[in-house]
Image (cartoon, rainbow, N blue to C red; front, side, top):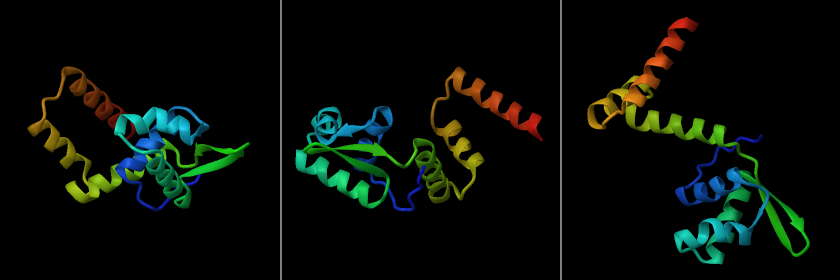
Length: 127
């Protein structure tokens, strides 16, 4: 899958989420799934699709009088880029600073703590 170096906005990410769940989708399908919920006009959805096309995050295939859209940017690649950006911007690139922040300012559930312990154990075993 193609990776895009261009930033995906919050609105564009909602369109991407719809396409990651199911594809290909028409502009009308995306409007029904995301646009109505966001109170977007059909023109807004089409503008978002055009922006994503120019960023090569999605592709379009002609289907009669309409286009069907599919993701070119994988969700995994998107999460990696966005996650790295978050870490770099807010936590000096350090995962430990992120975890410290959340452990001090958010209530971690027992499941969250167990999952973190499991991940740390896996990392220790890999070393």
